[in-house]
Amino acid sequence: MKGIGTVYYGEGIQEDLEKYRESALELGASRAAVIEASGIEVDELVTLKCRVPRCFGYGVCAHCPPHTVKPGELKEYLKRYRWAVFFTMDVPAGVIVREKTTIKERVEAYRKIFHIVSEVESRAFYDGYYLAVGFGAGSCRHTFCGQLEGCAALEGKKCRFSLRARPSMEAVGIDVYKMAAAAGWDIYPIGSSAKASDVPTGTLAGIVII
Ligand code: SF4
Image (cartoon, rainbow, N blue to C red; front, side, top):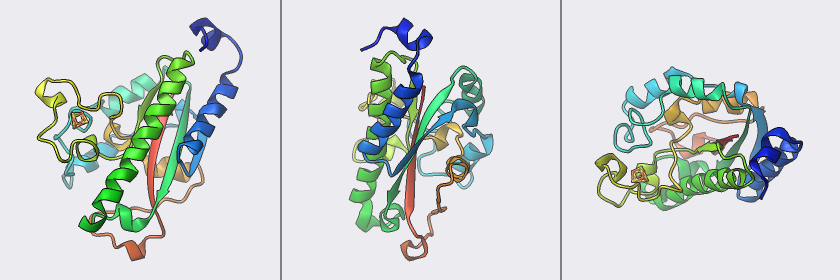
């Protein structure tokens, strides 16, 4: 563990960022990159897509719009951060398309993203980057509380998975497609009517801002 002064005013942040990038890969990401926080694409239009057509996650948990961090707020916060580790994970298209037969694998894939995000964020925190913050993929309501009644956090109680659940990148307005494309990584749009046979691969993404 490093002292905070060492972290913020000393050398070594590039080595630490590379360590977090490698951690993301070791934990299961297919690809990961260290990027500048200024390169994180945030757009209100991304959260418009949560409402039109209405997403099944909209309004049903504390980490989804309209309850979570707004894109405008995030833009302001990002001015105060310098770096991020962005990653994607390939998932078979048959798992990502919304078929009842693959729901177990789908939930596991989304949980893995939250696991990578929370682990990398935690490692950065304990290294002294105590303001590190991460965002995952999909709605925690379905990934963690799908079999449970309602969202505890929206009822004023403690989130049932407070250290694992995060808002998704898209829930706070981060344009995941644009960022993957900017990194030179292929990604395909998969909507409710997508057929697995038409899609080369599914992609889930996460980010930890440091
Ligand atoms: S209680 Fe469940 S649905 Fe609500 S924020 Fe926590 S993980 Fe998400």
